Length: 465
Image 1: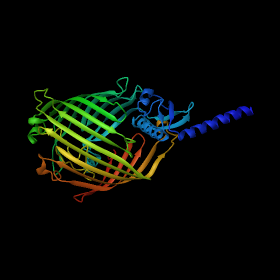
Image 2: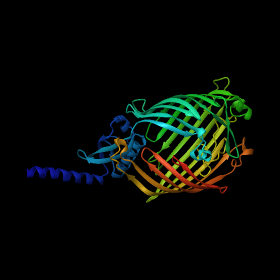
Image 3: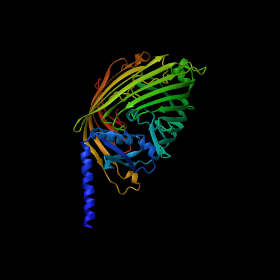
Image 4: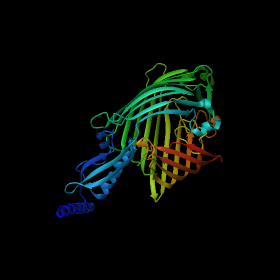
């Protein structure tokens, strides 16, 4: 018996030595890869995110980089709350990798409470309950265990909408092609038809909806490697507005029409090396959009507008608890004059912090943003044994303090007479606190100042960029 224990001890001891020695070797061979915790997720979905293959020979430094990046890729699928890995000795000079995963809850039938404004801060100015929308949103993530998503949404109130969609990211055997389809109908009580003093102006219909929209779209995605993604899309759009809108403005739709239908072609490209997409601290992203509104198919279309945008985002660790983040975004339009229904200047998806209550309409704009972050509370995990569902028992959060500066310019040749913030450089700066948590939770509380010496506290529930 003593001899048996001695043999086991020697095997364990020399096995540990052989792995420690292999750290210093240039050639560590990757053997098997195992996954623990993927109760629903198929293995081929996980293998698609790895930066290495079985049989690769790597140095210790390259091995660590590839394993860390593979773990980040797995997390960025949105299927897991946690991803971690460990290395064990394989046969001869090979090693085995085991990824430990904690799957998320995938079926989310949750209530919707939205406001009809661009952000919470704009709605909070009036606190108008009639501008709220209520509904139910069913998101079935990781449908069939293949990272597919099935969506159904119904909303009533300020906006009435019903839509259904299905996303298949791995359409072919090589897992390079994907497909997304969606269709829906929406109607709105109010129509934002113009802006004055850089505030949106609305028309409210007393009888029936002010605006009706029907859409259907199909998108094909292409992802050959791990960081490059491409999307090609075609959508059908039909817009109807109350005839009163055509009396209030002459450019909401092309040729002052009260109805328009058209096709839109989309190309989207992205190169992304960020560590965590929900709240990145390292890496960079380059993305571009090209929209072609109008393909000359319908007689009442009369629309030929091309919109292109480019965004560059990078996140840099400075050492210790400090991080720096920067962004540059530009957008421009070509062709015919852009109808108000489809033009989006500053103040919508892109905005200058401190100007949350304003819009700078225009066909072109540019934005520069910078953030200096300090990790006040590092990622803190908790164990809540009293929670009945295991996938919610291990929440975590982190807190960041940040100082920021944004600047931007919106070029407007149509509405400039009534909007003094257009066609001029504006800037905002301030201090804030970000709270991040599991299931991609982000909350930002910011105290901002503007060029016009306005100041205010603003609340957001998405990352800054």
